[in-house]
Length: 213
Length: 263
Image (cartoon, rainbow over all chains, first blue to last red; front, top):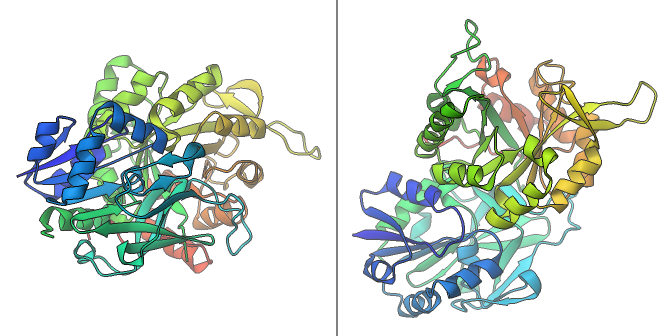
């Protein structure tokens, strides 16, 4: 029983590994070894920074093919986090347009910079901090988590999925309803950082490590 | 309902101990950072900032160990600042479990360091700390300058221009401290907070001078801050974090009122 955090060179994977270790006795490894990834019982696909770099590194480490194969098979649970969520879509408009993994239909878009709050204060981009997540559809990963619970976000781009059935959570920022939790079959992916979202985030990770889709 | 304003308790740490008057008796050796971080997390702090004021190089290992211990227990964002001068320093802190690093003097000495750090690690983990002091005379239009060395050394840099430059170089967030107000308990310098918050697109954390809960409210409503940082009002237990959050929420500010991890 091993949970593999896929390390393709983008971002700080220690936080997510530590948070997983906090909620499970299963073995957590940070790895880019295809055999270990294939042998794991569960996978976490993180991602940080620019999606162009993330897709580029996935290509360079020769993990893209494997990740795509695993997504096609859906034989074990996979949790995407942040850019790891965004990469599951068809396409991102970041850096002039980047084709992504195409597991779910939809696009990754930039927050408009002209948004204001109800006090007419300009909304900052990145969307950074704690915001409410509305559970759009029920899902085992929401077990024990309140409707409209706060989760921690840091991002300038957001997911707009095409199929409503794939959208499990939304978050309102300005006039945008971002699709912050999406999924299909054994895959679930979130824009927020469960590993930094205190009690609710740890609960989501705990739900993931016990999930049998 | 939407994005909450954040309350960030700050731990000033020297050689592995929180030093900024955590109890009434001793100024030095006032508490274990891990215990204090856990306490704030239980109270529902939105983030924790760990400021390493350690002077000697040997104590750096202690700091790394502290960051590792906090990051293994406290699952909210953790920013580490103090003595971050190279990309290796950043990597060490991120590997220890920090989510963001705060760069201060090194940015003034070499602005390109901020650019390099943002390219290498992503803007989301680069906070630039700005220590500003008012330099305009009474009656003049207000102007603030960047100071280093705890407010003793002027740099000639205009604070608002500097803030814009740092964001252009890739800072993902700004930690703004008023050197005139720091330690005074007279409230934030709302003028510079508002000027910088209006001038940049990234979140601004207001710091320096918090003495009561109205100061936190003003920082957000008048200063336009996205987050407020305070040390002594929480360390001395003058106010708890839930009390501060309720107070701010009652004044119409969006806050995350749910409790932390341990509830």
